[in-house]
Image (cartoon, rainbow, N blue to C red; front, top):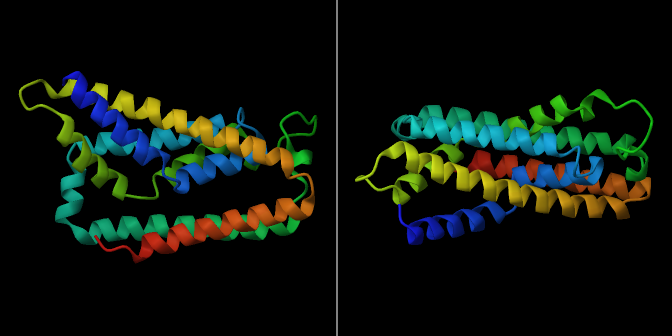
Length: 214
């Protein structure tokens, strides 16, 4: 893979990763609620799921899902249902929301189990893995930048490594923005409004995913 091809791939991934989606929304909302340091667990969960899906795609599952639309639809609807569930849960939690200032990592109060690193990691992993189109995306994108004349493994490592670096960079940008946003959410009223908006967007993502046709 020459430099020109790599730069074209990096530019493509940078644009696609920057587009707001469930992953970025989750990272931003966790950045607002927990600060960017704690939200790194969410980022790790999202990235782990995406890397797993890309690896599965490289193993041929992307072609398999294309050949078996019913399986794809099952995974797609399951992912859509999870996003709707997450949105409803976030919306309902707004009823009991406090000012974000009271939930910052600097407090000496015990950390709620839902805010612990493993819980945040699991949340990120489930949201990122809720969209099987990522597998088809990887199956369609990666071969375009791989040369059949060279061994596939070094190329795969280079492309996936580039993807991971760019994706994580956008995670930090979104989490940083969320953290700054959290600094202005000082009243319980505004915090509740933020959670309801976030919940509504997650439900919209889920409904949009459910309505897609492969």
